[in-house]
Image (tube, rainbow, N blue to C red; front, side, top):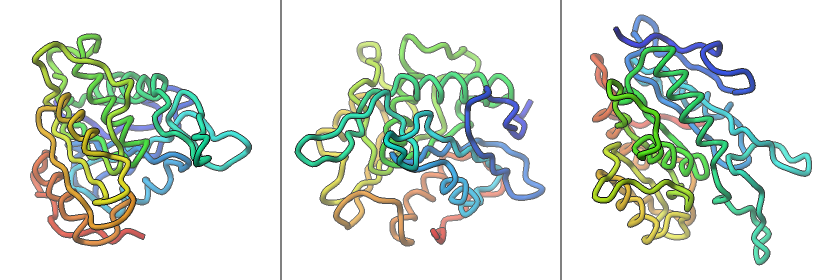
Length: 254
């Protein structure tokens, strides 16, 4: 049986998200889960999901569970808030135990898979910066020996797209000689990126299929033109299960 369109009632109380259905008359064959960056909310990614208008794909824009301190607007995915004493900036890699449980157990396994009827291969993750870190850790967690995935759904997701987000230091170790089969696309700046060369090698040590696209810019950020958007749409075209075909062109990002 194919999966059905998720609703907010499929997820626990306290989980804040927005659901964007596929274009009219198209059944939701896939689910794309979008994870925002540090200090943001799920609402801009709800807009992004509408702009993408991916065929036969229901999009879930998920809000991070922890509000920023000091009455600042926005939310974060970390277990703690740590400031770099030299720069005053917030550290992105502060543990993601609660967020990983939220993504893997509450949203993916109990919600999208068990209640809505999707297989792992029909679920994709898209994360920016700290959200990308959570997406990568979640995919690694699903492939770890401690995962509660069942044999009939598998542990291979449709794919992970991480923009400017590396694998967290708290990511689980896999069994010796085993790598996660979920394909990964990393998009990063050519200079000033949070995803260093050593971080890329660490991702390749956990995931079997890793593609890296460098954008000619200083510092990571969301895609802003056709050239930067194209590899993302090509990745969707390869990995989404769709009878309609995924468009190859760019999406206007407002």
